[in-house]
Image 1 (cartoon, rainbow, N blue to C red):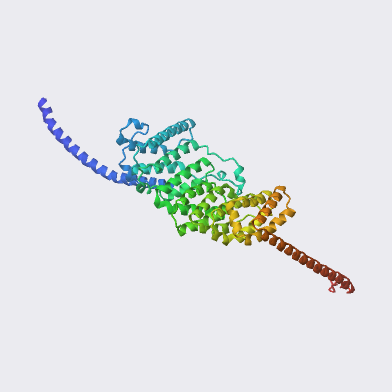
Image 2 (image 1 turned 45 degrees about the horizontal axis):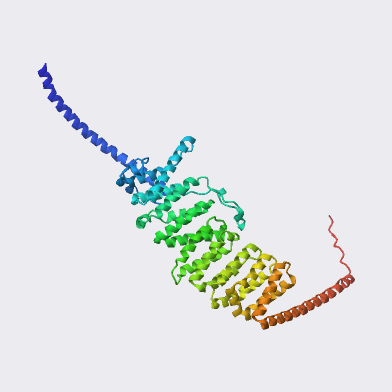
Length: 506
């Protein structure tokens, strides 16, 4: 019995070996054939997912970069992992923040939001500590997370329907999701400002489409978000020199659309504030491209009714240009006169103030080119029935530099200004304006009494000639009316026409 069992054991082992080998071969063959299908399906899934990521975000995040990243539990703290694992933990936490919260279950959604908020706070602390090291995978994950959380299209209710400067009095709208957005902005700002960030690698992900989507966010109604975007865009402009021409062109296109099409945009003041800092860094002599930016972008910004929202930043940019090249003052004053308001008194006050700032910087040669049209406009402001406009125009004589320009060119300017002062002294309704007019005339007499008297005599001659011309016109009209008065009597002598009668039988 035992012998029979022993005889069977070797044969059984051989059979099992052969079966095992055959089974392995068949399994290998089956697995190879299945792998071909699985690999194909898996590759299609990866490519489709990458296409989705490209649509959601402007940055491209190749799968090859993430392939060598070791997965680390995102709930771990940075203090509980070794230094080599911290970059992988950083990426895992960023991927966790890319997930959308569940809105169908309020309790679960609140828990997910709290977890995401704690993770973002931990990421901000880790980056601000200075111990972070960003490889290409970390840069890609950071840009992906920011794109998913920040880039969005604002609903129509978000955008203001007002196109005038009255929007200043409205209370700003605050985004209810700002508590989460603020953490993402803080993290991205810390990331962009990081001293050891490799700009050559980061520019592959912070590319032109990414910057365009970032500029779209300046449409936000929330001033806190626009303020964060202002700082971030300025850091991007400073760090990525290759993108500087593109940023200038993209902002120019936004302003073109605002000035010539919609006249609606919430972030013009912030964009101009960025450019105020950029213009101050332009090298001298200015490039032709920068001069064209002044003439085609900044000067037309005086046209919209809502100029009061961003006029302070606009004036700063214009003054920076004139400081770099004083010859540009002529172009700026000409542009101001082109867009000078006629019925908007508040806008007119802004233009007078900006003109005064430019006159403080202008050279004598450039001033002489534009003094005639400029002081014709100022003479109209002196006669304005809006007392604030008239007061502000009179205040120009209190500026020492402007007064010095007037003194040196009084032979041209006095004849332009004196008639307006004379009309004010006779006809203006406001007592303060009358007092200012009296003081200005006294100042002109102190500067050049003979010229003032000559202007007065010339004005009297012009008034007398005007009165004579008015009398001649009056007499001419009286003769015409008298001559026209005889025609009806003569017309009565002509017999009236008889009404036509129809001779055809009906």
